[in-house]
Structures are given as C-alpha cells and as structure tokens.
Image (tube, rainbow over all chains, first blue to last red; front, side, top):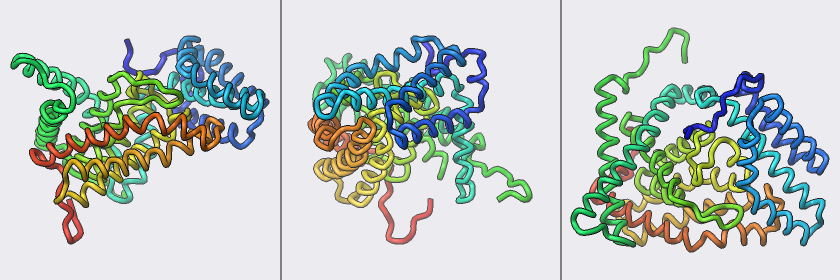
Length: 213
Length: 187
C-alpha cells in the first residue's frame, strides 16, 4: 500500500512543473463550463485520456478507479437528466464531470507530493507581507502526518484500558467518557511537542536578509 | 502565531484525517462522513482562526495528493467533483463555529454549542455545497436539495450535538480558546 496517490513513471508529463499542470487543470475547468457543448466535453475527455494514458503512461487502473467510484452517481445523474431534459444534456453533464475528475486525477498521479508542497509554499509567499511565515508549512505538514498514528495509538490505549475495567461505555456516554478525554490528552501532547520544538529553536524568527521585506 | 498554535492546528488536521477512516455511508452524490464532526470540533475547540487553519491544512494535505478523505479519496479530483462545494465550505464552517463559540465562551453549554454547530456546520456548509453541486451536476434546485442536503440533516444534527458535548468537556478540563478580551488581543 502506498500512502500517496502519486504514480512514478518517467514521462514528459511527470517532468512538467507542478504549477503548469495545475494551471492546465484550471484552464480545462473554465473551458468546460464556459463552452458547455458535448463536443467540447468529448474532445476534452479524449485529450485527458491521451495525456494520462498515452503521454504519462499511467496504468488504466489509476483512472478506472476514479471513474468506478463515480459510477452510481453518474448513472443517476444521466437518468435524471434524460427524464427531465433530454439524453444529450444527460450525456454532456456526465461527460463533463467525468473529464474534470479524471484530469484532476492525472495531475495528482503525475506530481510528487513534495512538488505540490512547493507550489503551496509559493502560493503562501504573499503572506510574508502581513507577517506570515509560509516556510512553516513544512513543519505543519510534518506534525499533522506524525500525529495521525499517534492519535490512533492513543485511542486504542483508552479502549484497552476501558476493556480491562469491564468494557467501554457505548453510545452517547462514550462522547464524554472516551472521546473528550482522548482529545484532552492529545491537546496536552500537542502542547508538549510545541514546547520541545521551541526548546530546539522552532520559534526563532529567521534573520532577515538585507533588502528583504 | 506560536509553535503551540501550529501544533494544535496540525493536531486537528490529523483528527479530521483519522475520522476519515470511519467508513462513510454512500447516499448518492455526496457521502455521509464522520469528517464534518472533525470540522465542527476544530472550530468549537480551537476557535475561529486556528480552527479555520486546521481545516485548511487538512484540505491542502488532501489536495497535494494524500488519500485522507473518507473512503481513501484524495488528490485534486474531489475539489472539482460533486462534493467540491462542501469541501470548500469546511474552513468557513470551522471559522464561523469558532467565532460564535468564542463569543458564547462564558455561557457555553451543550445546547448553546449545538446551536452554534448547526449554524456553522449545517447552514454554512449547505449554503456553499448545494449551489456548487447544482452547478457541477447541472441539477435543479429541488434535485440538488434532495440529493445534497436532505439525506444529511439527521446525521449532521447528531454530529452538531456530539461536537458540542465533546467541546463542553474539553472546555472545562483543558480550555484552548481564551475569553475574547474587550481590548484588541495580541498573541
């Protein structure tokens, strides 16, 4: 099992800068809604498949999984449109939605998480003008991902402790006896982590370069 | 913003991610998930600013390609699909809940908290989610409401109550929100 949805392939699409791919995706979304004709949506779907399966050489399963997840919804959508409007509008709406979702999946599958993070930092750069620190995005990412397994482990520990005392309370009472204390423990842990980070200099304001903002 | 605030923000992003591992109930275009409980908790426990940032951080983690949405969804696809509007509304919902919670902090109880969570977690989320669903799927208002709002109301009411009950205990044992001061606050 892989955590990220990135699919490593040596292809020109993978090598494109993440920003370019994101702009293409945005442009496609604008086009699909600004020129709402079945021909445009159909051409966009073919284009997306050519880029995703042809140029980027993604496994068919990567895109098929996205389409499969939408299957019932697309079917219902088509039927609703066919009954209330006509079959062409149903096919068009389904086509447009499928195209957008697949194009987004192509961008995600061909772009490393680290490159996306760089785009996020770039987008956050203007925050510097109002005293923000976009470089701390990396720290936030690291903490959030590290907290996920800690959280699961703490929840298991509380469950085990309650089982040892004759079974965990169920239903509404569990909110007060299990979930709330767990959250308090986690907040205390987050506080401890932040003190440990500060002790190691995480709160230091970086020296500003001359000429900087 | 102190390192402690960053740790709280990261923690609630993780809470929302873990709530995504609870199986979702598929009821049409938008699944019922436990993750909106996390969104409500972020606002009710952390307050407006940190709650907003925690949910935003979670969405950024999803957008950069981590499968953290319920059912292992992730990447950019959910942000252009039928549930896109609901996702965009989440940070706003956490902010509104946080703002209202801060203002009722001295008199907070489960009932008041539930009302706050209903306003932020139901009214705000539907107000953004339903129109986007209508546009993306080309539905009528009636169809969008039937598919994108009605099935969620019972679950969302329960989540609003649950988040308030949890936040009430946390408030008494480990308050994170500070009482809004009369003068300008600097942290």
